[in-house]
Amino acid sequence: MNLEGLGKIILLVALVLLLVGSSLYIAGRFLGMQHLPGDIQYKKGDYSFSFPLGTCIILSVIVTIILNAVFFVWKKR
Picture 1 (tube, rainbow, N blue to C red):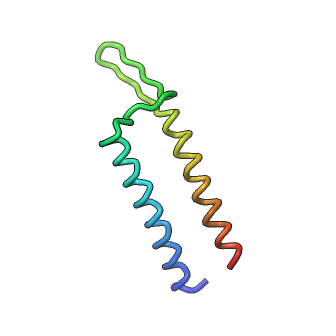
Picture 2: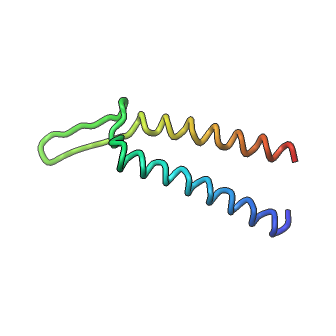
């Protein structure tokens, strides 16, 4: 693979990360989606623990769909 192809891949990955990051920022900031159903939160006194399980599942599905689309397009070339 030449450097031109590698540069295109890096730009595509950066664009995908920008889109995902922007949508997460907007969802958290303006749509009030800080805690989704399935997120685990535990508070006791001064101790608090939070694990965003629902968010991880949704992000995993979204990233899987995006990567499958990218690889599908990549194989057609």
